[in-house]
Image: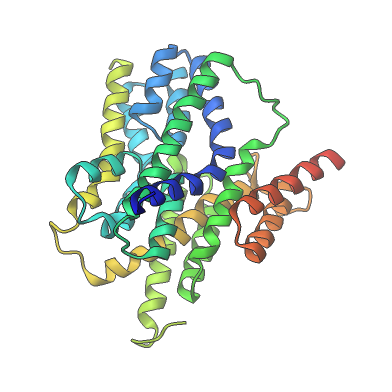
Amino acid sequence: MNISQRSFWAGVRAELPLLMGVVPFGMIYGVLALNAGLRPVAAQMMSSIVFAGSAQFITAQLVREAVPGTVIVLTIAVVNLRHMLYSASVAPYVRDLPMGWKILLSYLLTDEAYAVTILNYEKEGDAPSGHWFFLGAGLTLWISWQLSTAAGILLGTTLPESWPLDFALPITFIALIFPTLKDRPAIAAALTAGTVALFAHDLPYKLGLMLAGLLGILVGTVLEERKAPKGTL
Amino acid sequence: MSIWLVFLLGGILTFGMRFIFIYLLGRIEIPETLRRALRFVPPAVLTAIVVPELLVRSGQIDLSPSNFRLLAGMAAVLVAWKTKNTLLTILGGMLVLVLLELIF
């Protein structure tokens, strides 16, 4: 196996634990979309055209409530604002790739693919095969999302409601946060973001998440700037 | 607006937000401070996703021990910290949550 293939499969493997949370989420989306009155083919196509879990849930809800299309489109945009932060965050690592790769990887840049990919980039630095890892993680998530949507549409929800599978994603992210807490500014960024997210949780359209992310980044950056020029912890 | 147009526009906007900085980097000069700020995206955004999932139940902040997700989340933090292993963290957190819900 050459380095590209090894990197690709490493990305696939890194993404696998997240599927425990993603698959039930996709199935529930499929069921919810049908209940909202979407036809099966439309419910499935939303998973490949929009390809963003929480925006799809909200869209299904708005379709059910017969909200005007313009409002739905704007809602999708606002709910997905955080992806701009992911885009900026991975940009330095993919800057020398051909445009086709940039387009493909951008399409695959979800929360779940971002979380494992950025950890790999931070660990491996500018390793020339990093984009294969990204592709492996992104494709694994994409395929799982399409298949779990289809399963939800075809089978309906077969998972008992008492199974707390929706909890799998948040705890996966807990595992992924730890390696990013490398020094005091990073810890301060996380604490700030967590606190703001908590108190802003009832802002609509996931704006609490966006606000919390931005303030966390700001606090981390300010603390870092105040450190001695060569200071590292 | 037809549902297909909604999906198409929503999809284009979502793709655009994922693509914009990947596209722009190298074409525009990015200030050094902003560049350094980027390393705080993962800890800040991931924590902002997780915290409300653990602490907000039915729309209310719930810090009591009867919030099993908080307890299971704390168990997951402990496992993540001790083992640095994603799979063990998920299994540990899920196990604690399922046990708490079964017992109480």
